[in-house]
Image (cartoon, rainbow, N blue to C red; front, top):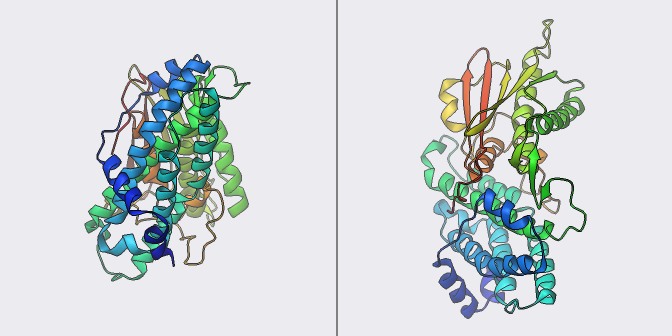
Amino acid sequence: MAAKKASEIFSKSMIEDMHKWGCLKQTGVSLRYMMEFGSEPNDRNLLISAQFLHKELPIRIARRAIELENLPCGLSHKPAVLKVKDMYLDSFRDIRSFPDIKNMNDERTFTEMIKAIKVRHNNVVPSLALGVQQLKKGMDPKIDYEDLDEIHQFLDRFYMSRIGIRMLIGQHVELHNPHPAPHCVGYIHTKMSPVEVARNASEDARSMCCREYGSAPNVHIYGDPNFTFPYVPAHLHMMVFELVKNSLRAVQERFMDSEKVTPPIRIIVADGLEDVTIKVSDEGGGIARSGLPRIFTYLYSTARNPLDEHADLGIADNIVTMAGYGYGLPICRLYARYFGGDLQIISMEGYGTDAYLHLSRLGDSQEPLP
């Protein structure tokens, strides 16, 4: 049934329109531009923003929908992937059928529509992950997944584009907030304290660890709590949460039956001229050197896999559900790279792992546009 939906519901002319828009050039924006433009969310700026999204979103969405048609190894035909493709076709049709935005009534209606589109796409990450699991189940278990570069590259492009689409929609929607928090411009906090965000993310990760294991290692944070810079707190929270969660799990499992004192996870926040770097260090035993090349692929995890063929994907996608299907680290790196940063993992097998999260403090790098 899912395989028939695209041909039955979407007209030939709309599919042709999608391919035409998918060939148009994307327009990237920087963190600094979003911050400066959004600092005065008056009617004129909101109208300009909506008109930009009315033209930009169909290009980005069309490109991803076209890619979903031509994936290797039969991935395009997996039920979960067909479901994602239908989401993108629905969203492309909704935006393209919306008339030109000429006044604030149009702008408000358009904003409600793209807000609904963002909600529609909440479950894209677990849905695609399920599609990849469906693909893996039909493959030779001895296959070298590092050879599936095309799928890894597709998922990198797809998820990077998704980060951008959700950032643009979320930023525009949040500019309508009549009571923004102090120093906030949409999603961006102009005076974000990385130490404070790291502390909150660590507490959330420790709570999760306590629920699963009954206890959690301590987390020590070193850095100036008064240092601030402009960034998106939700992005940083997600990245630090994922890194700390991995470290907590490794340490907890290594020392669970040991009489030795469980060593803490250490977080160091360094303020450089170009980058703010956050190092997360653990003594969880590290990763074998042979396994390091795989940690940024989407087909590798050291944890149990929470997905199955009958998974209920009718829930909002939460970073917590990423544990176990190998998406935490690669998606963290994409979030870091979205605003010009990066993520590096250095491991010492038999001792522990250091994760270096680099964030560009300049804010002037353009979005990567896959």
